[in-house]
Amino acid sequence: MSLVDRWTQSMMDNYGTPPLGLVRGEGAVVYDESGRSYVDLLGGIAVNVLGHAHPAVVAAVSKQVAALGHVSNLYVAEPPVALAELLLALAGRQGRVFFANSGSEVNEAAFKLSRLTGRTHAVSTQGGFHGRTMGSLALTGQPSKADPFRPLPGEVTHVPYGDVAALDAAVTTETAMVILEPIQGENGVVVPPAGYLAAAREITTAKGALLVLDEVQTGVGRTGHWFAHQADGVEPDIVTLAKGLGGGLPIGACLAFGGAADLFGPGSHGSTFGGNPISCAAALAVISTIANEGLLDHVKRIGERIKTGVEALGHPLVREVRGAGLLLGVVLSAPASGAVAGVLRDAGFLTNPVQPDVLRLAPPLILSADQVDAFLAALPSALDAAS
Ligand code: PMP
Image 1 (tube, rainbow, N blue to C red):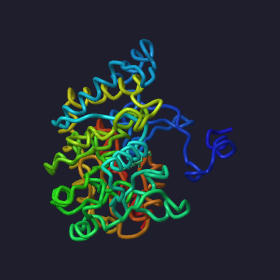
Image 2: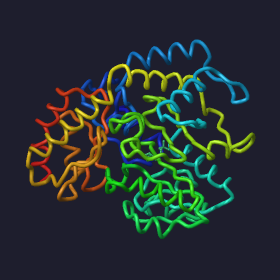
Image 3: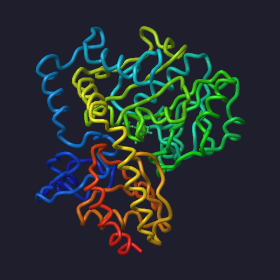
Image 4: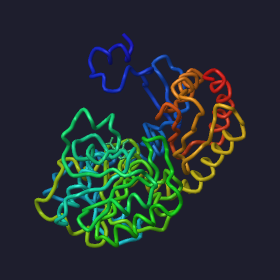
């Protein structure tokens, strides 16, 4: 029986029947059960920043699991401390870090932390995605995901993304926090107008609310910066990271700066696996490899190669390519992203129809120019077939 057949009998159908069973990966390439290879332009949904089976991650994880696999948070180990220090150094600011295991959990942590300001109300954005646990789902601005589970915790107002006036009107001196993605990933790689994050900073500062930037999808080099907001020069109170941080191992980090760093105290919050030394060792290897191999510049170059290459096709089904670095959305002029992704898969490229009219690319940051050119060569016939 194939992996997909076994899946249909044993696993809850939360994601729709998967088209492929994958058994192995190397670099930016994955292999299915029949041995067919695919260029992985989705990267585990922005997770596998160094691709699959990267030697630095394999070595770091192997070494750590053989040395000290787990300690409870009643004790301390080197990898989480070193990772916290490194993340704060990359942010270039004083602060403190709380580790958990996923994006939902670190947004949950930020939400709880904001309650300790004594305020309760949160402002988020329509279309924004912050997770699926009950608190993070309350922050998520996608009714299709949230409505079946109401009532949700929290008093959350969702304002149109990118609209400074709407944000200003919604944030009051009672607002505990504003949470935003620098680019809305799940909503279809939606980029806000220039100056939006800076305006959000001004508004939250003026009203004494915390500014939380959800960099779960945009962080760790994805946009060609360690954190996407660094391109805007803003200083948020809290940054949440997950996805790419562990290069494939589960880890999330909630970075808090200034006064926000001291809101959690003993007993405030916790996570059994948060700060697990193996995940933290993987994250340390991911960050040092990005730095040592100059991957931030590579991301900018390769992202631009995809963007200009797709635009140069001049295909009528392509309206625009948006995003930054290697978080890109190919916006179609018709709701055909599923069809395009299907044809591309058959041609050996994994992409993601994140919205009916948006094909998302979030490949490993190590994607090569040759792999981009192969994708650009395969794309026209996939677009033709879906037109
Ligand atoms: N925030 C953002 C911006 C995300 O893209 C995601 C995942 N798509 C999450 C939070 C939730 O992360 P997780 O699935 O790891 O809980």
